[in-house]
Structures are given as C-alpha cells and as structure tokens.
Image (tube, rainbow, N blue to C red; front, side, top):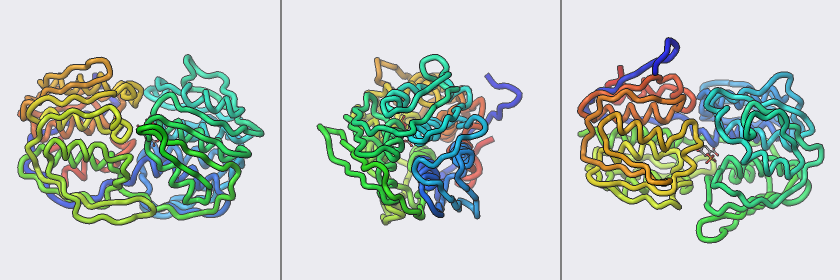
Length: 444
Ligand code: S3P
C-alpha cells in the first residue's frame, strides 16, 4: 500500500549500464568508527563515512552520550571521545531510526557505563529482537527495564557500574550480538570472550585492534571463531578510512549482470572475505566479474571490480555461506530470477528478523513479478527462466534492500517494476537513484 507520505518509484527496461562509480562507505564500518572514536579519549577522524540515515542516528547517539561529533566535510568527521566507561546519561531517548546495527552496538557500549539510557527506533526496528543482545549484557551486570514485549524497543538499559567479563557462546550467527558483547567487555576488568559457531563479519575486532585494544581471534570448530578481548585497554585516538560498501555495490553489480550490454567498474569495493559470499556465488553462477586492482585501504582489502552482463545459471548456496552474504539474498534472488535453472539458498533463518521478514518479502517480490519461487523451511528456492515478466508493484516494508533489489529487477524484466516507497533507500545508500540514472538506469 502506498500512502501520501511515501515516494513510489518505478524502474523500466534500460539500455546497458555503463560507467565507473564508487558506492558510499561501508555501513558496518561507519557505525563502528563513530562508536569506537566516541569511546576513545582524544580526537579521532573518519573519512569516507556513510552519511546515510542509519549512521547519522549513531552519530546523534554518540553526541547525546557526551562525545563531540562534528562533520568537517563530505564524508569527513572529527570525534572527541569520552573514554571507555565515560558516557554521560542522555537527557532524552536515543532514536536509532531503522538501524539494528546502531541500536545493538550502542546497547553494548552503554552496558559498560553506570548510566541509564532509553533506546527507541521506527516501526521496523521496534519489531526486531533485542533479547539476543540483552541476555549477555545482563550477564555482564547491565539491566533492561521497561522493555516492550519480548525485550523489544522502546527499552531502557541501566548500564553496569562494574561490568563483569564473560565467556559467551553466541546462539545465533550475529556480528551485531558479538560486537555488543565486545563493546561492553571494553569496560570490564579481565577477558571477555565470544564464541561463534559460524564466523561473522569481523570489523569490530579489526577496529578494536586499530584503536589499540588487545583482541585475539582463533578458529573454532569447522566454521567458527573464538574471540577474546582484554578489558579496560588504553585506547588511542585513530584515523579511520571507510571503504566502499560491498552490500551497496551489490545492487549496481547485479543490475549490470542482468542488463544486456552492460560494462561497469565499481571502485574500491571492500573485499573482506567475511563479506564476499555474494561475489563468490555470482561467480559460480557464471557472472563475468573481474578484479582489476586490489589494494589495502585503512586495514581492509579493497578491489576495483569490472562487471559485464552475463548469462547466469542456477546454483545451490550452502548454509555456511549465509553469514558472509546475509544482507545480499534479496539481490541474489533477483540474479537467480534472471538465471537459467533453479537456485536453492539454504539456511536463511536470520532473514526473518532483518529490517523486514526478508524471506517472505523476497518471495513476494519475485512472485508479483511472475517468478516461480518457494520457501521450504529456512530455504528459498527460485526457478529462473532467463528473464522475468515483471509488471509488479513491490511492497518494501520499510526495507531499503527490498527497494533497491526490486528496482534492479525492473531494469531488465519484460515489464516495469514498481516499489511503493523509495524513502528508506537513504538509510544505507544516499544518492542511489541519481547514481543509477547516471549509469543509464531508467528510474521514474
Ligand atoms: C551487521 C550485521 C548483520 C547485518 C547488518 C550489519 C553489522 O546483522 O545484517 O546489516 O554491522 O554488524 P546480524 O549481526 O544481526 O546478522
């Protein structure tokens, strides 16, 4: 359903996508750069920060907690932090908008301070589970009060005056949960350990080291990690360079693969192996993606990628790959709809608790555009037939990635694809519509 405040958008069959672009900074690294700078005494700087709504909410939260946070130019930010355990009690609720990452990481950061803070967000964030983060934080001595049903937002967290270090075996593969525990562990005396059965993105660990904390990460079982942080470190102010977000690059990348004649260069895309499951899967599907240059950019490997329109075939995506592409299944499902044959994506349980229930939403997005799709337990099965009919209006459910995925679909399907609301794209990819139009996308 559209309403008077929503901004619908339609994508139509387009000519080749061509050009050279750099998508905005990585969302995960941007949140962490602000939070860790705010927990460090002295002046830190960040360049290439993603200035999307999600990250701006985190910047506002850091200010409300007592850090000085200033924008000094495009993507350039200067932060005077207050030190580990040094946050001040905010005078009003912290609003995280649509952002699960901002909210969960700041819950961890506040849990190690002797203050109370109220956390809130929009209708989508209010539906998302917070208990998974509150459980370990309560073991460390924090206390959640006034939470809505099932530990949801809005809730108030009373941080611990003297947080206890814990060893926590994470019941879900979640980098947000891992990060919340590690950020709380900064203020605890002794070692805080998180054990994850499946390795999730490691940006928190990398950035903690960059700011001077002692973190040791070892492999655990077949796919997991055991991460130990030494509490109460002397963090030193640092400068952080934010690389381009592979999860944002995914949209023009798949747009180019499915739109005949396309030839596109994506510059400086972060290729941290815990984020590149989509690229690996697309290569298995026959995608023409060439790495033209690699380099190190602020502690992360980045690459320029050349992408050309390709004939794709269906594949099976194993469940253990999910953490390295958890945000990319929607756009992979679009690629699968343009492939020949069946793509089975296994083990997608976590998709149900994202900005929307992405398992159902992905199936709906494809169905209204004439694609045969099934959900089998936690698996998504897409029957690709080369080119979908399109012609559907996709409900975006306040979810930026549904909006962008559906728009990519319309570039190459027989009929235009509409979305009910494009407003949430700005949470992670400000300038998306203009950038895509600049490459040749017909978005109206
Ligand atoms: C993120 C972790 C993932 C991902 C989200 C960003 C992070 O969530 O979906 O977009 O920055 O840590 P989970 O940790 O809940 O899987």
